[in-house]
Length: 127
Length: 108
Image (cartoon, rainbow over all chains, first blue to last red; front, side):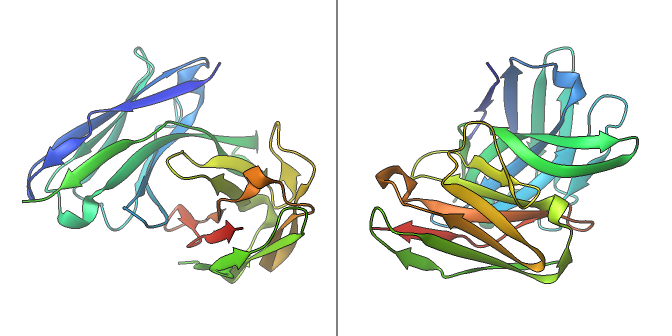
């Protein structure tokens, strides 16, 4: 059974840092790309960051977090991380990790979607 | 940046009725990259439809997706009580890599 479990959320003050983790099981972790998606209270979904699978660990970020957040993965421990620095009030949200899957032929991929999600970790930035 | 606009914002229907949810893109989107999710209160999103029209594993056949170019539709043929939730469309692009629509709340 595929499982993703986030941890590391909490209450921090503006300007502080926090590191989220996503522990996974039930699949070959290194074969899959992963994402962080967040949801502010009462709001919609916002994609935050992407990291590619083993051998293609490209990273991408939403403009709203670029330069402040860093995504990383530990293939040996099947875990995903999000280092969040210089946090702002508007970063308050539930943060989900999500597995990214696609049908690929060489470098051409299609039918890209997030097929498994964690339950989320709440990050609150407030003074 | 491609913007996805979902309509209506809220859709009020009864069990047994047909629901039609719209997702309109500001530029043409490959059907291969258009996805629909369902989210219930307090839960993570759940994958429903990918490639604009392919149902994810375990999704009942009352859910169907269609569309191309800039106009995409999620249809629920006969609403069940458990279908009342918020629905999001999503697309894969270049920058940003992914965008979501703002969601449609389907309420009784």
